[in-house]
Amino acid sequence: MLNHISSAHLKGDFFGGLTATIIALPMALSFGMATGLGAPAGLWGAVLVGLTAALFGGTPSLISEPTGPMTVMFTTIIANLTANVDDPAMAIPMAFTVVMMAGLFQILLGTFKLGRYVTMMPYMVISGFISGTGIVLMILQLPACLGHPIPPGGVLGILRALPDLLSNIQSRDALLAVITLFILYFTPKRVRDIFPAQLMALILGTLITSIFFADGAVRCIGILPNGLPQLVKPHFELSHLQLMVVSSGILGVLGSIDALLTSVVADSITRTEHDSNKELIGQGLGNLVSGLFGGLPGAGATMGTILNIKSGGRTALSGVIRALLLMIIILGFRDLTAKIPLSVLGAIGVKLGFDIADWNLLKLAHRLSLKGALIMHSVVLITIFVDIMVAVGVGVFMANLLTIERMSTTQSKTIKTVVSVADDEVQLTELEKSLLDEAQGRVLIFYLAGHLVFGVAKTISREYKAIKGYDAIIFDVREASHIGITSSLAIENAIQEALENNHQVYIVGAKDSTLQRFRALGVLDCVPPSHVCDNLANAIAAAVARIKKHS
Image 1: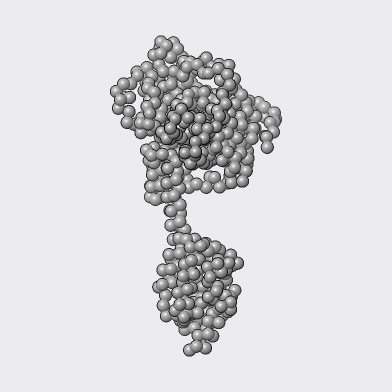
Image 2: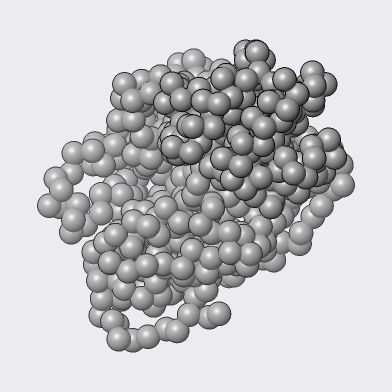
């Protein structure tokens, strides 16, 4: 289960890990501060998730660390628990317990080989959710950019307090935020390729604070706690267990989607193929360990992974090197963080949130599909103004309704009725046509094909009720690959009504699973065994003969 650590690509892995460390440091600091738990939570999350996922994951070049969507989701979980638990002091241990549970959930997904199903969520939902988290991340950084602590109440609390924040801007903090954003947006690409703009802004902002501003003039991180992180004892409250389970499930699914999508990006660059299930186990172990030691949850990070690969990283050793370098910085150079301005980290978070949002699709979605655009924009708005978990649920529900509608429309076209050879919608053999001619319109073929799910049941009932003037009806299900329960019930109702009206009923080409369902519904108790046929011509011949006999 443990990945083999090879030195075959030592040089490339070292420089890949070093580059990923440089980009991870400001991101981890920014994410830690965004949650309100402080820089250590972000840094140790980057170390523990990254190291564990590298050792046990299924994508050799993947860099795992706290990401924007995971940070926003975790911030929401903290806010929900703080607002609901009786003792707010227990909200943080419970939040880290949720991270551990999310890790266990990911391990289960990987163990039961469900990795390939995780990314099947509709893209409009994923894009809307990611865009919403990007905007939320930007909003969460606004107080720090303006020189203020984050007001209570999450996103809505910040928006309500925004007029007061703007009327009391701390000029030095705001200046540093503007300088940081200028560096992030306007540093030439050839310079960024050599020296990441985030680290450049972090160093320059720290130097300006140290040289030009007196102690306390600008809000800073302060010195990191000494030593290794403390073990967090899992804490459960039965009255809030449902909230914790739901939160952990969504956090686990989000982390899995985030990681596996990044793994696909890594595969496209390295021309390799990752192991989805092994990666989920690695990600789950990473979040489990991170939660146990008070670190933020994480997932595969696209930016860090791409930089790692472009710098030569090819094996799990690059992720191990990155985690160890970060640990050395935390333990050996903790005093250097004392003068890092929070406004600089806030500005880095604003830029990251802006980059996360899928602005192009937000602008073009209505041209692709109005209904798809409605889903995406609904998910964005619910993510921002209501709750991330609600946004995911509503988005998936709306997307499923749209999918069912499309499937039903397509499948309804495969339901046809034939009473004479003039009806050319269904291909009949010469023998079947000849026999149908003999029936003189008194035998009706009810043709069903394809995958018949519950959305088609209404069409079956409507088509049946529209037909009149026949003595025998043949339900031809030879081309029906699957008949769902609801569609089976609709067919059963049509058969029962036909029998009540003294019409003959024949069933042609029913597969074993369909026959079993009809038997369970009691349909076969009413239809003579001789009327259950494998061949359409035999069914037509039997129906014609019986009609002539009773004429």
